[in-house]
Image (cartoon, rainbow, N blue to C red; front, side, top):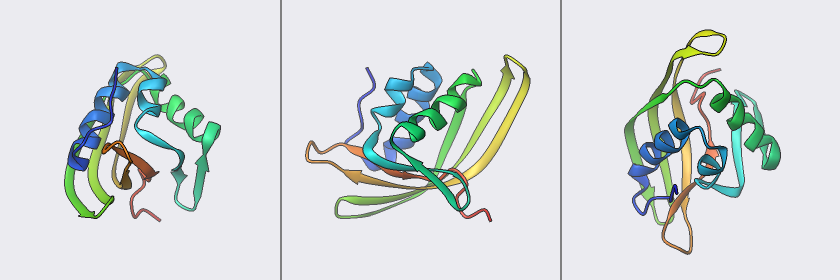
Length: 125
């Protein structure tokens, strides 16, 4: 079972493991209930729409690789900046999605870090 980490710098690694398991519930456990997912610059979803957006990526059936570039922590908030690559052969042919994400995580009362803002587009326009 996927468990949110106690070190915010590990959250992208744990996310990649959950993503690569193909289990939407495992991915969802790494997000706060009211978390925001930026589907494209200027557009964001929450709740069930966020879960559906994440599930769309999982349906590609292709693994993700994440590399954390920077982690900045202030109290119970962390800014995580990293690069990702989703690449492989999906059910409808080759897939290659790459980008630099800018995410915000928060430490919960249980001491574990979860995403509150997942922005895979980073600073793209």
